[in-house]
Length: 89
Image 1: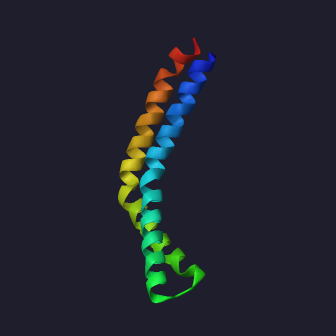
Image 2: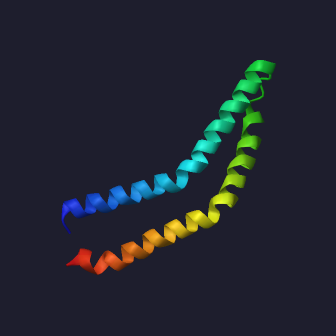
């Protein structure tokens, strides 16, 4: 298997994982930032306070985007398996 093909497959896999995980990570970042600003304004120094809102926000976005994520992942996997015979030869 040529090195260019391996690099292309690895690049595509990383892009797909970034595309699927990106919205969840962005929501966790925004919620964590908002909770940190709220903690700074109110002088609450509880370390675990930011965990629960992030957990609920990421869970809600995950449930909202689950069908899109599964469709995208199935499409990528199907295309990968269809192109597998051409990749081997």
